[in-house]
Amino acid sequence: MKKKYRLIKLGAIGIITGLCNGLFGSGGGTVVVPSMEMFLKVEEHKAHATAIAVILPLTLVSAFLYIKNDYVDWNITWQVSIGGVIGGYVGARLLKNIPSGILRKIFGVFMLIAAVRMVLQ
Image (cartoon, rainbow, N blue to C red; front, side, top):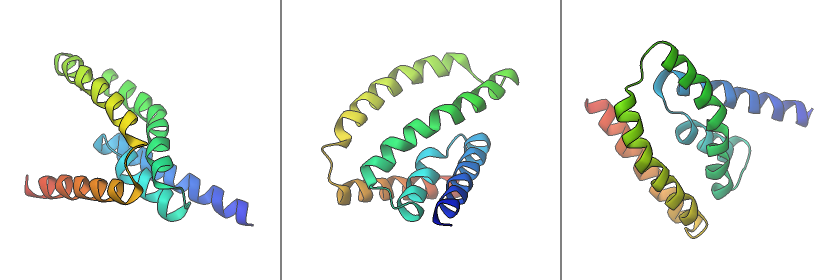
């Protein structure tokens, strides 16, 4: 029964994450990380790293549909992607050096800033 309950949790996290990714272009950090920590008891560093792997297939599906519907500005995409690759590399290298408590606080502040910005726009 415990295994079945875990599968239900995994499926629910996946569906909610996919919906958020498709609708808002976000879901990995904002949904997967807290969900894995709270409902699956995944260690913080592992939750952040796993979220990146979870985002890949979601992003591929969403990107395909966005591209198909001509929603993508390719000029901006290539320019931002260069910085994103550099930032992703640096962030992944730094993750192992940041204690869980500090990582949680940084992530929380980031989420609060994003939330306030979205509400005020």
